[in-house]
Image (cartoon, rainbow, N blue to C red; front, top):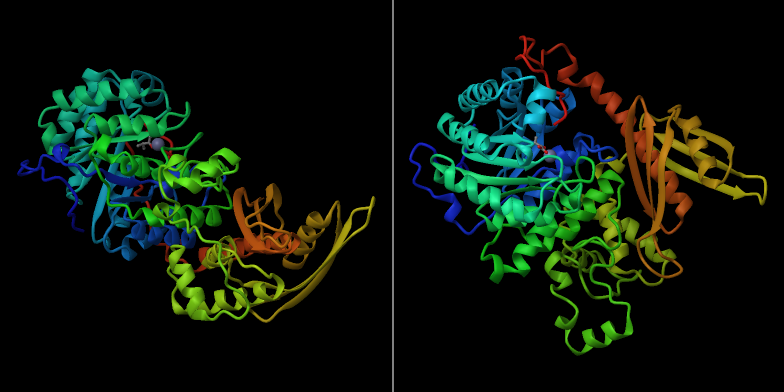
Length: 549
Ligand code: KIV
Ligand code: ZN
């Protein structure tokens, strides 16, 4: 395990806080993924991790290995795959957690162990039952233990914004001395304001001993809608790492949205005088990829990546735009990876034109995936006269590897009966050679299709969320069906796109069944379930925290 991103603790001459680059620490796959409705399986996490590396994030928090064998496996796989990005694993200040995190990171090129421990009086008293001194001693011992594995150790003082600032100074000073090179002051409950953030970071940077040896970091939650503003305030007061997630997903109201922070720093560069390494043209495709993988769309009016972010409806605005773009646009859609043109590909277009267009839209597609996309493009072009950029994006995003088998739909028929429900017949084929057909009636066509699929595959699931939306325009627009279903005490997401919303629904439901089945297959073949001890069974420290940060 090596590290290249840590500030040098030993020499201490790199004054990170004086630099003008803000490190982007992405926690979509940890803080984001742990929020209800956003869970991703291993393949989805790997797919997202690769997109985040291509986007240019500096540090990617891949998970919390001690939380579950799945989390461990995801971190391990991401660590083995990424080449440039530092892969980070979260751990409580407990030796078992740290050992497991280190094992999951063993094959990473660049790795970081991220330790967290609550410091606020509320948490010390009610969650940990620890005194200040115990918190301090535990943090120091854990940092020293983690440093035996990894040169790059981050320490987070959980609930920092409700912690006595003097105690933060004490624990951060000790953390630096123990070997931490990144100090994170999270606003765990989204309580603070920008002015308070500036005050705290200024105070910390002035008073923490050897502050120049560490990078100060912010980690803001959005409970009061101030996560991005608070993160930017921290940066303006010297923080040089921001922890954030794509689309702002995360615990409760979410984390600070990566795309908003990055674009604020870019658009207002003269104000902040700072930059990041993010390739902003990949922001929109990465955001879309996440919505596809989780089945959770962003609101239309979401800053930077929402459908309306660059749409101008009112006559006055349109008139202004036509005269001069900057009248109503502070950034160009292309800067975030949204192509502007309404295009013009049709059923006579070839692979080359399609690939080129997809590339302009920010999707790099390998030859294998291209074949599938091209086939679906041709099928779409037969049904639809005008194929727009949104259609192409939908096709490219449909390449989610999780959308693959083992079940495939070979036939689907539905009929609605006014006043008396609907019926559906499905025929499915399984990669093991089975062909199954089932019919069902339901309250409507969606219900009937779901019941028929449940019967045919023998997978029981309870639909907890269902949403259909048009993702392109016109009478022959493509619709995206997104659903979440409960099975074996877990939420599973599926989504699919088609010009026929019932077909999209059937494919989304089948994507869920396929995920459930593939997960079951993996659990029986995984090395982790074959008796290899994953977790340290040594007794843990005095205070047991939840394994969900
Ligand atoms: O919000 C929080 O405090 C966290 C820590 C684990 C950094 O997510
Ligand atoms: Zn958090």
